[in-house]
Length: 517
Ligand code: XMP
Image (cartoon, rainbow, N blue to C red; front, side, top):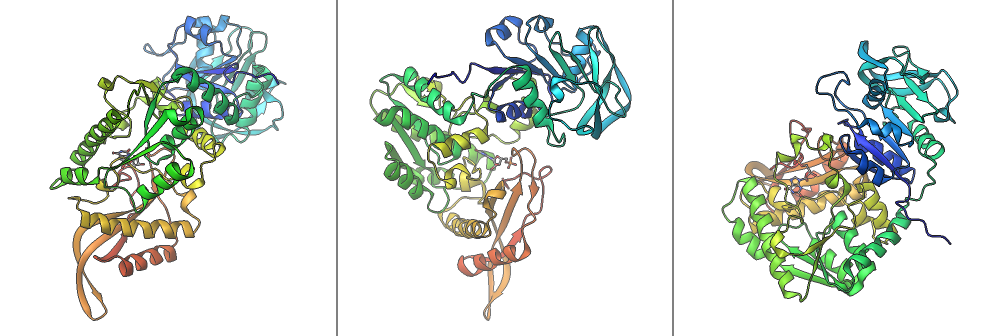
């Protein structure tokens, strides 16, 4: 059987800053076609080298006729590669090729009904009128020469245009969002029929290609990887283990702020079950010693992040002749683009397993750097990781330290661990674990009065938190059933010594955050 390179067919998304740019790439990949996002400003030589089968110009917040409007190198129109402009991307095509873009009298946000004005390969298998999602203040007022309007809505006479000869299309609406009911079909028409892609990007072929790449990069070298038990480092570890066997050593650091049984589970799964070379380091005492008396959340994060690096480095030095450091970096961290450099990331300093110092002088191996999170999960499943790992809710690097409010002590951690385990057990039993972005308990070290039996009690409070979110940037609290909440509260108060009250956090983000610290 002939082996195809999964990167043989690529779609290039040029980003003009739309909040939906990542979504475009993910939608294309759902059609099993590899796709990368780059800033609109990359030069034509780079595009030529990238050798895309098609180019998508994203939406964006600017006006094409504004003095500081972002513009693509017009050389893209001479590459003879199919181009699809979406929203701003469509207006950019009009602006660059001699059409006219102007402010729309009726701004259009939300659903619209699209009618086809002509037959077009882009319209294959659609049923007009189609429901589409609009979000624009500008629109194309006059077509560039050689273009035809192929679709219209009530407020936009040119809601879609095409120049079939030049192979350029433009859509005023967003096919990548779910509210455009047949948007996936439309993107499929572009990627398959127009660009001629065949769908080589499957997670199965990704694994084969990546294993070969890892072997080529590492040769007979030795690799270390910080395993946290989270999805990314776990999947990276599995891939590397498959490629390299014992050339890989995973280091798992118990930082003393893990959840109930977590350390044991990691050792069981990776060490005993998958037979990886796993070094388990119980550094919990040194972390907890450093946290004595510390109440400031940012200080907790810094201490834990720095101590992790110290412990990891010490451990790495014990292993002879290491030349590579593997990390579970994902594609969203790699994308260099106008839309993902927002101010949001600096609200809390996030310490992940990454961020190891350069002086370690190790070459990086990042087998997941082309993948979105949902693809990482798929790879994990293909590699035989169980749902407990692959579908695990996110867990912060500083662990329970930022869920024990105030000072982190052994006694407080014990209470939180027990309460958290009960919450998770009940959420799982109710079949809700997979539907919730994150669910956890928080210890509020404030005492309140209660009564148990005939005794008056004066004990601590546990807050329950369950949120839904797409990416952690915004979140809404989950409307958990009352009887489930009641069961969790009852069990915690009855089973966990030191707690006599349970409350449920109903704040969304913003203005709250997901974690309490
Ligand atoms: P917030 O609390 O900022 O959390 O709404 C957003 C997401 O980030 C996680 N989080 C962290 N993850 N190190 C991490 O690795 C951290 O210091 C950290 N703080 C918050 C949080 O669990 C949620 O998923």
